[in-house]
Image 1 (cartoon, rainbow, N blue to C red):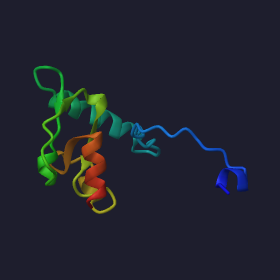
Image 2: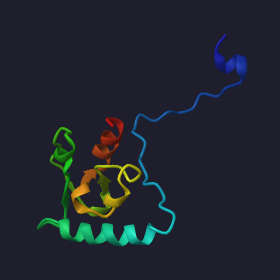
Image 3: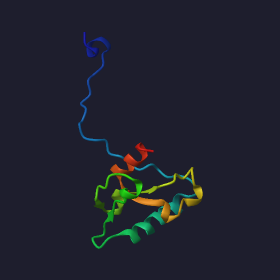
Image 4: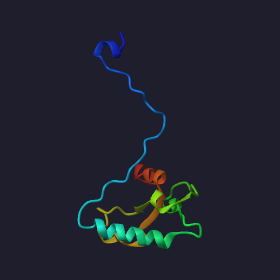
Length: 109
């Protein structure tokens, strides 16, 4: 007897597309400061086409060579915010990563 019959479970239509990652909602007193800092950093990081190139090589990840619009890129802390809070706004501790590379960076920690 199948699980569907035995327990009344309906089979769901499962899509083969990867789940779309959404950024975590930032809350707290640092929210506005971080948003302003990220936007200023994005403006300074744009290339001549208005795109930001992934800096995955700085994280020891395989180089993807992708450049995207700032809204499609994540600004990642090399040393975590909990590990080194004094480096929260230090540009030398930040790298631009595609969302896929960002997920891989956290997976490999």
